[in-house]
Image (cartoon, rainbow, N blue to C red; front, side, top):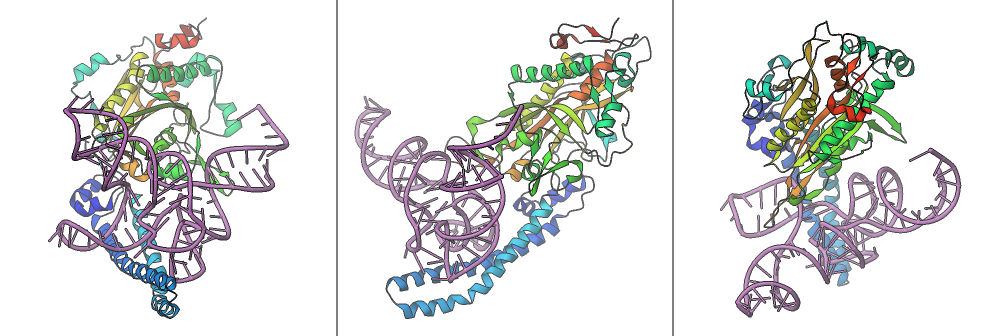
Length: 442
RNA sequence: GGAGAGAUGGCAGAGCGGUUGAAUGCACCGCACUCGAAAUGCGGCAUAGGGGCAACUCUAUCGGGGGUUCGAAUCCCUCUCUCUCCGCCA
């Protein structure tokens, strides 16, 4: 969420940043007009409150001196403030809400080095901080070659009987899947492998968060108020709880309304959780297979850092996600999302796109974002800088998938499929598969 | 599900209608003392929003929201959370 004071001081920068975003029409001048109204109301209200406070103190003194006549006189004087103060308070509340409602629906501002563009066609391939196409190609697994026409994941022999969309539809409708046998085990192996990697090699703390959260948490990370239709809710007493769309929500909100010590930073959390998305508005897209589901497993990474460290942490987090694909021998590319394709809370986002030979295309398998203080402001998440007594500052937050487990399963199946319908198990996964080197072989 | 108790500054913990934004202790930061440190003494130490070039000043905040009152940390309502006991339960 933006700081109105910042907009007041930098109206042109604000307007320029918003013009790069999609479907955003807010202008600084409108916000500043509301803010001026707000401040005028505050001045009037404060004056009345000051008057009331000082008169009330005098009443107290008069009563202490048993000067009842004087007290009555003062009470009469303060009586007329009784009308104007509640009025002013109501006005202040209304205008603050008006401003907050608008500010909370404004997306974050892109960093300077984010490419300007309208949609995914304007995303730019990224080869690392000092990388080139050549260095990246060397570091990343090569695209596999096939002596036969590779199939889509749900058509592969070994998959067909153990990835069951019919039973899932019977239970839950479309966009759900039932995994069985070795396919279910492979999904589990992938999740365990990723968690172990991030906790033992990348310094993340393993978390088992709730997957049901309250509205406040969703507001903190930015899903509310704008994206309510993308979420599942379940009634709870008089209220409701949402099924998390990503573990970013609970883990980032760990620091909600807290003041951390600088020494505690960075905080790095990872969790393997189911994620729930209503996929409103994506009817007809990716309807075959398990690419786009209402429920899927994902390993999420969250970092809480100082403002100075967040950019470095972003590159570090990207590398952590890339390591997953490298260890699995999956070919991929990294894209820097353009201003029009970025998510609501991000200042900069890298997408990892894994190669799917069955689809003959790259598909997103991880998204790594730095949010600056955007979420921190919504959450009131701050830290106290060490050294000389200093005022608290907002932390920076980052999140990334490390990676989407369901989509990674698809990638393993498609990339390691054999002509006979079996699938080889990548070496890194074999310990998690009881030593199996392939599934579905004769 | 039933019955109670509670939520105060970084932490602990007073206050229960009137100069209380809040005692006291701990922690922390200055200064003094010391060759240095400890101990001791003195001082400082919440957050946010206004106004002012500034010095400074005003307002709000004692879990959140609402109410009573000239005046609320203190009284009432409500929500959230925590704890204790009973019941139920993976």
